[in-house]
Length: 303
Image (cartoon, rainbow, N blue to C red):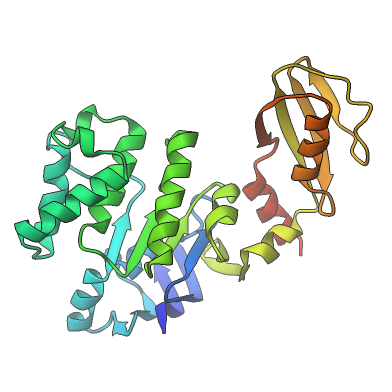
């Protein structure tokens, strides 16, 4: 069974903007799926229709076996979905724990069941110590995690994450990744939008790319990233050592703390780092020089 089945979905706004054009898309139950595209590509509109927040112009949408054209089915479908929006849309003057418990009430969950579930989520997401603080006192990353906790309080079968790690620091981002992997492993279907290709590679199995309201590519993530012919990485080191013993690579020394290296598909970053470490160089940071997701979009559009 699919968690989401979309057929010939079209959305035309009142001003004439055609946000979605005959979109076909299927997300299998239990999948960790990425929906990728530039701003304005149609991602948010598609998510809005799946969650019944936006009315479609035409086409068919099913969430699990529920037909969103049927009002009774639509109500049942909403109960299966947890949504983490891009924007913070909670009462910033309300206490963290109260925000979660209030959400539980919307789904008819009794307090005696909601409280331990809220405690578990807040602890998992590192917010338990802030449970009695008002939301406005939280950092941007903590607010993002609060959105995730709120979305999960009713234990949805489908979790939709619209750029969940925006504004979250590196350490917290990896912690969130681990929890999302755990959720998915336990059976929750996850649909993710993100601007970080690293996030897609780390967590997702399948990805679709949308451009101007149309799905232009839908494939396994491991196949998509193969379209990147080469990549340039920036490596920061604690202390520069001679690099003459490094073989099969041609690193460039930028300054006394920075190295750049271009890798083809046949070369691995791990091999380079191992050779670099063998020289006695201590690596403190590694990151791609370019925006890899944008580069992948441009590469695929040329296919």
